[in-house]
Image 1 (cartoon, rainbow, N blue to C red):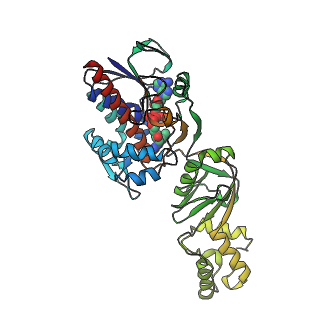
Image 2: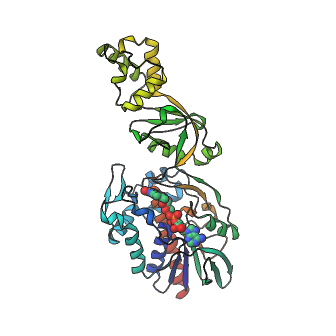
Image 3: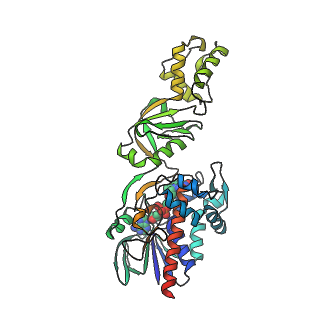
Amino acid sequence: MNLTVAGCGPAGLIAAISAAQGCPGLDVLVLEREAEPLRWMNDPRNPPALTRADDDADAFAAACPNGGEFMRGACMAFPPSQMALWLREAGIRCQTMPDASLRPLPGLAAQRLSICLLEAAKMAGVRIVTGNALVEMSASTEGFRLWTKNGPSLDADYVLLATGGRSGQLGWALATQFGHMPRKWVPSPVLLCTNDHRAKVSAPLEVPGARAWLPELDAEAGGGVTLHPNGIGGRAVLELTARHSAALAELGHTTMLEINWAAHLTQGQPTRILREIQQSHARKTVVEDPVMDLPVKLWERLLADMKLPPDSRWSALSPAKLQALAGQIVSTRIKTDGRAMNKAEWVASGGVPLEELAQDSLQSLRQRGLYMAGEMLDIDALPGGWNLHCAWATGWMAGNAVADAARARIG
Ligand SMILES: Cc1cc2nc3c(=O)[nH]c(=O)nc-3n(C[C@H](O)[C@H](O)[C@H](O)COP(=O)(O)OP(=O)(O)OC[C@H]3O[C@@H](n4cnc5c(N)ncnc54)[C@H](O)[C@@H]3O)c2cc1C
C-alpha cells in the first residue's frame, strides 16, 4: 500500500510524516519539484512565524478571512501547542513573539530549519525525491497512475496534493481533471504601490500606531503602517490586503488608502494637541518639532504637502492651517496604483473549495483516494503564524486520514 505526496512544503511534509507514523505498513513517497525544498524558512533575517503561541480556536477562526469555521475545527484537532511540541521534538526551539506568534530562536537552529524538518521525515521512513514534479495523473479502480517530469511513472494507492498556492498551479490543474473547480489565485497580502511623494522612502519607515482604511471597500485595520521603498505595508495594510485580496485584485490594486498616523488618539485630540504645542512652542519652527511620535521624515513630508515654508513657526499657523495639519495627520489620502510582493511573508488566496472535500479527512468528494492540504485549498489566513499553521493542520489531518484508510485496508 503506498501514498505519493506531491509537494514538499510544510503541508506535504507533515502530511507525509503523519501518514507514515499513523500506518507503519504504508510506503510514503514525497515528490518535490524544487531541488532544495523549504529553503525559504532558513532566512536568518526573517525567521518565519511557524505557528501561534496559544490554542485560541476563536481567534484562529477570526484570523482567517476565508475558511475560518473550518479552521476553528482544524485548530482544535491539531492545535498550535501540538505543533510547537512537534517542532521541539524535531529539534526546532521557538520563542513567543510580542504578537503571540511562535518563531524559531535566532541562530544556527533557525538557519537549519528545513534540514530539521526533512530529517524528521526521514526518521519517520518517508522517502523524498527532489527536483522532479508530478505532471500528470489518472485514476482507475486499481488506484492512480502518476507521471513525473523527469520520469519514471509511478503507481499509487493514495495521492495527496500539497503543491501550494503560489507555485501550485499545476496541482490545481491536476485537481481540475477530477472535477474540482479551484477559485482564482490572488497574491495576498501585498504591499500597495503609489507614486505619492509622501510615501516615497529609501529605507523602511514604521509608524506602529497607524491605522489604514480603504474607503472603496469600507474596510479598515490597525496595527501599524510601514512605508517601504517598494510600497506601503505594515500590519494594517497587510491585514487589509489579506482580507480583501479578491476585491483589491479586481480593482487592480488601484484605490484610495486613507491613513491615520495617530490612531491612538481620540477624535478632536490631535487638533487640541496642536493648539497646545502652538502655545507652548510658539517661537519654534514647526518642522523641527514633530508631534504625536511621528517619524521626522514623515512629519517633514506632511508639512511639505501643506506648502508650509520650512522656516514657518508655530505662532504663524492660522487656525485653518492648524486644522488642516490635524487633518493630514489623521487622514492622509494616498492613491495606490498597483501592488508589490510582501517578500517577508508570501501568502496567496484562492484554491480548491472546501465544499469539494470531506471536512474531516480532506479527501476529495470527486475522486476516492485523492487528498489535498495546505495552500492548495481555498483557505486564507493572516500572516503571523496563522497562515503556516493552516498548512501544518490541514497536512496533519489529511495525512492521518490516509493512514486510517490504509490501516483499514491492510487489516
Ligand atoms: C519567504 C516566505 C516567508 C513566509 N513566511 C511566513 C510566515 O512567517 N508565517 C506564515 O504563516 N506564513 C508564511 N509564509 C507563507 C507560507 O509559506 C505558506 O502559507 C505555506 O508555505 C503553504 O504551505 P504549502 O505546503 O501548502 O505550500 P508551499 O509551501 O508552497 O509548498 C508547495 C510545494 O510544492 C512544490 N510543488 C509545486 N508543484 C509541484 C508539482 N507539480 N510536483 C511536485 N512538487 C510541486 C513546490 O515547489 C513547493 O515546495 C511565507 C512564505 C514565503 C515564501
